[in-house]
Length: 585
Image 1 (tube, rainbow, N blue to C red):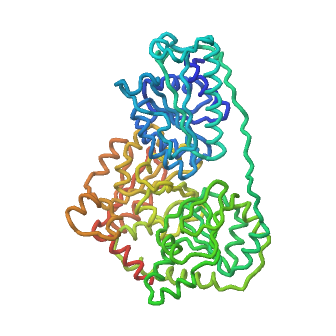
Image 2 (image 1 turned 30 degrees about the horizontal axis):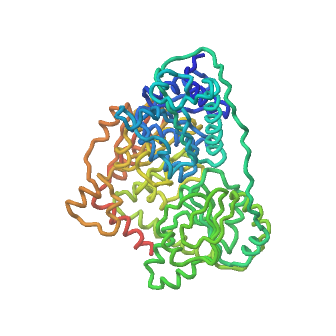
Image 3 (image 1 turned 120 degrees about the vertical axis):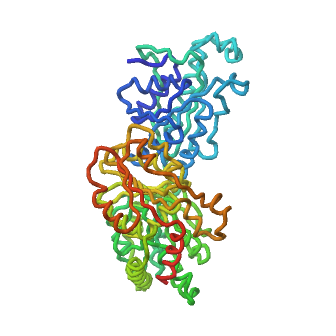
């Protein structure tokens, strides 16, 4: 087997293999050749070639998100690394173990006018779990290193002694960074300076890097479960909000207990991956009628929780954020073993435990309370469900109706990826089948990598994948299609409303040329031509009838991916959406 002749490149490959990290996404380059040689020549690794670094990083992120395991992204030096930043930030806020490995120029070639060279050390400082900046080997290209940086060679040590010190330092940094990726589910950055020659190989690996065992740090904070249970049992109005969560992460037994407690209401979102008929999955449909009521204050106080418990990641609904910031709970607990955000400016306790541990220790001590908290909220839910059904039967074909039809037609057990902005917000308004596994990049809520993330996630999925996206999100990440890893059962639905339709529902919208150019960014690009370029079957729907006809065969087996373009009226969508909240109120 062939190995790079450079010790630090050998070390990186050795450490990753020793830790069981199999998936490596590589973008082309010369400076990263030692890494590419090492990973691609070892049959242990599954390597993927993605040219566009921004797409490559999101592809790796999607894979790590799906597998819940670290995935490596490898790039060359210079601006290539900067293109990783959106995915790194997303991984940081979504707790996804993305391992970024960047090749770098030697320090003595930085800021002297050398090509493809930037200041790469600690580049992601504010959005990374750990930054490992390896030291440059001096046993490789020794004469060149001596020529440009003689200070690296101490007079009192031999070359072998100095290289041994470098090896020890690099091993320690690699151990530290990979430990963070595994134990904290955080992105990490490993930066490695390489001197030329970059393509030399050896047949035998004589290096023996030191891989230290991961010693897990115990939570030093003792949790008084009895005290938490007493607080739980003392309140008749308990609200549980489940944010972004991985499928099947909360035990069904605990979900059932919460669902059947009269003193508890459980708000979920499509990204919660938590289902029960007694839950409240369309938060905005509960809050909007309160906002618009003449009895707003009375209804708000009735809904205001005494105890708020949040689980999972970030929350989509702006309405519930605004509501709980105005009508604060007496206590707000966030249950998460890693971190807690004070989203509602009322956080009183961070319970450093996973959801199942919390439920096991608190719910087993519960006792039944007389409360009408659930029944009142359920009455509001039944009302909006009836009104929504009536509304759907009366409205013309728009984004709203298209989403209702699409959401009700997704086959069971599909993996569903949602783009941000309008897409994920519309999806909150409708019911999804509990068998679906739903993902969305809600860490930073950007539109920049939805397609790449979905394709990366689909690679190892047992079930087919559907991506629902908007036209701007799709065009923005169109390079995400530029790879050979798109499965034939991959499906894309693009809601094409000719621009950024979400801006039409935001305050300050005006029908002016400036608004259409700089906010809505009206576009008339032809999706069919893009599909032809990437060998994707294109289907089009323009009304209710053609959409239902297209969906009747959309999920059927095919010899290439299929994209369904749903064209909706740009100037009507916002009116139908805003009128919905008036109608159900």
